[in-house]
Image (cartoon, rainbow, N blue to C red; front, side, top):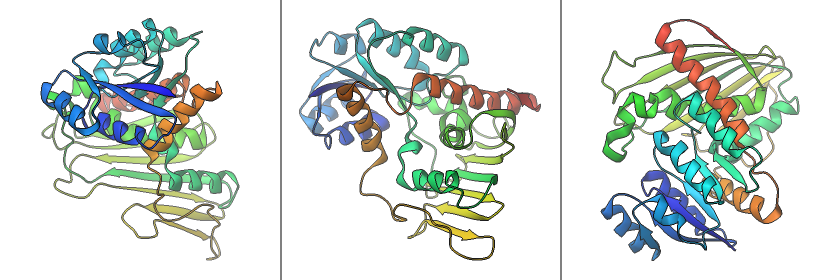
Length: 328
């Protein structure tokens, strides 16, 4: 049994806590949050012990895994505390707010004898996994262009409205489009050039939109769009990948969200169900983390993976700031 302590009981802390209930090999035993109302909610929800800080949580000697669900700007300090205590660690994305913080986290984890996983959850979404397999299996021929969209819902709510503070959150690029950047890296490999535009500084912080153009070393081009500007709309994601032999597409708003067509109009074989899986991707990523501990293997998403994605994402932030192409 892996005994888990969750740090932060905001949106993601609640999602993770719920997902942990479905994992037979895991037990949520303590939640840390600075807000007394959130601590009371966690106690009502799961009957667990609650504390006000990660330091108090780490004094519980029976905790095996620390699940960090706090705002991005706190990740490095909480990660360092968990390393010092010798715990397994699962940390929500993005790895860190800055590249320097991420590099320090990588250095801290070098040679560490416990397991560390990072929450890039799109890698665990069955539809996205199925599309990746279809592309890698050559179902659309050589891939040439990809296009993603993520957003549509109202602005995210957070502790002291931290999402709206660019210095703390990195805005829509670092908090939202990083999901698709990580997925595309997982599919196509290294990125060599980044160009991005954003409304940051030209609209209210609560209505930010961004567009990113990625060129991968293998020649694939990707258009990545993210939006916090559709209030009060419906959150949705889309994905299209076109190749020399056809195209596969996904739209989360549709009853059958995956669609594939070959260049001659025939179907593309996308393995796996085209309907939403009964398994939450948050359950799947945390199950992978728990299994990694029990099986003594690396989790699917490592600190090295997350740092590489952070580097590309922050290059997009820099490109949007300067108006220049960033070479990687």
